[in-house]
Image 1 (cartoon, rainbow, N blue to C red):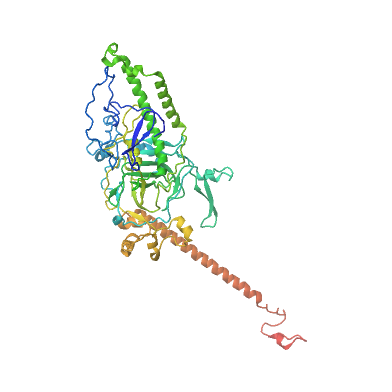
Image 2: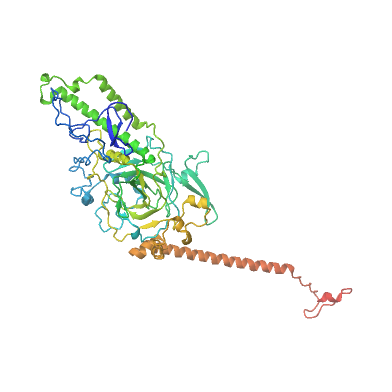
Length: 607
């Protein structure tokens, strides 16, 4: 929140302070005053809105008597938050904006009416990547209540009937972009906090044409031997920003498009909704139009109230945006109040004894304008931040996950995502959760308009029905971590039955029945065909497999026949080489008359 030694105070929870229920921390030097548009509760003010003009006479008597019996000691249980409820969102856009939606179940633009939303912000955000996405982003799918792909859902072990076809962990890279890079945008949106990364990806053909000394240091290439024994160029990483190698045939490093923080969590796990959710979105920038993997990491409160240092780096960047917008709002209000003081707002200014805004020392306005310009400059030239890795191990604490085919959780709810919900939540302190809520729910733009469209402190879409969908869970039975394989020199890719207990398996839970239920399919398409009767893709794959098998068999037979022919020719050549050639017959000797032994020749020479 800053460290200016002057006038503004914000209150945060501090469970480690034995003699105080709150920890008061000095921040920016100017308390950002409220207005009819900005209704944020300030515990150090007696009224929500200041008067247009100050009172001509000071108040002589206080409004209420102090407590006759003050508490001897502070409360042992500190109050978690400064407000009873979150401020109500603005509804100015509801009437005129077809893209507006909110989370109020009783609103005409609430979740039950999302199917009427047009040109939603998410469809506009993904539109530049439409060529990699098969479904049309202009089609709103939010009202498809019978779909097996709408998100979010409650992932539960007892509903994991799908099979894990992943064969290695998510191999991620943090990339070259810092959260402080001007090209990286920290956005406080109506429904989430978002870190938006620039799309900087080199084409594999472009990489192939570069010499080693011209190729960017953040790229990685290698040469592989294909089935025909020929050397093949492969671009393993052509992404400058964060990326990941997602298992299950997605290809090498895919670029991260953005990271979102939602409050509370949209996905549930084992029947529990968490305090928040951290979502990493990638895109398969290939011609296959498979869509996008999305990684969900649930956020819980730390039992020891320990802060998450990795996540705090991103929160600090969001705080800078929040402070800048609030300061711009304050500048607008200061201008309006100064103008109101000059005009008197219907009150004869000549009858007034004083005016706070007119009498404010000029140096105070200079200080404020300097402070505002400093915040605005920092937007384009971030400084003082440590590096932010969206895949930091303090955030992503497991390699195992639940997986299912799903959708966007906001209009237009397009079904092109494949979700991976990590099975171990990360944790934050209460102060960090307080900060996230303040950033999202108390944000105002430069015109002092509330931006959040939450409902009672929630921007989470209601859970969607399973409708028979297949959810799978990947664990050590399916693959080891790369680190485990290196440390233990493991030849096997996964833990076998005799060593499952070492990796956290309980034989009472992971029974033979469970294994048979979740590992009975040959391919994902085979699973869909058997379960849902959706066999078009499987039959196509099966035909391709059978054709490939037939071609391989024919090739093998031809190679075998050619090999046998070569061996027969070789044997024939060897036989002719050691067998003596017959003696030439004299031209005047009959064919059936034995040859006459030459004189001086031994008797055995005729044999």
